[in-house]
Length: 115
Image 1 (cartoon, rainbow, N blue to C red):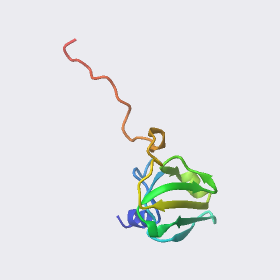
Image 2: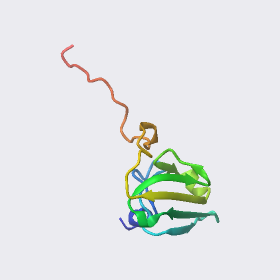
Image 3: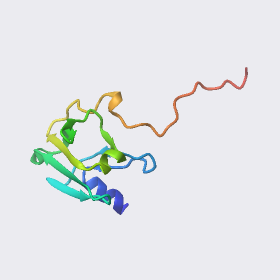
Image 4: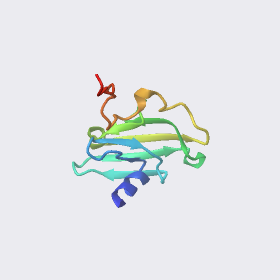
């Protein structure tokens, strides 16, 4: 639980630690840096932190993120992860394609045992 809390306080956390994806949360600090074991650094910056709890936009290394998650490979590349916050919710991250991969297998039609 302590590792989850540290990551969550940094603005992201693994929903499924085995799949290598991190879902965005809210950074508890205006900015933070993580020195990675490969020598690179990931800097995390929150813009408009005083405005509160809704992410309106996110970018990684200057590229807008349309998804609410990023991969371990992206994390290991280092760079800058930025969040723009607001008091009001936005439609950012609400598209089905923005969701992280599911850990549930695709739906399968139920089998009728009476056939």
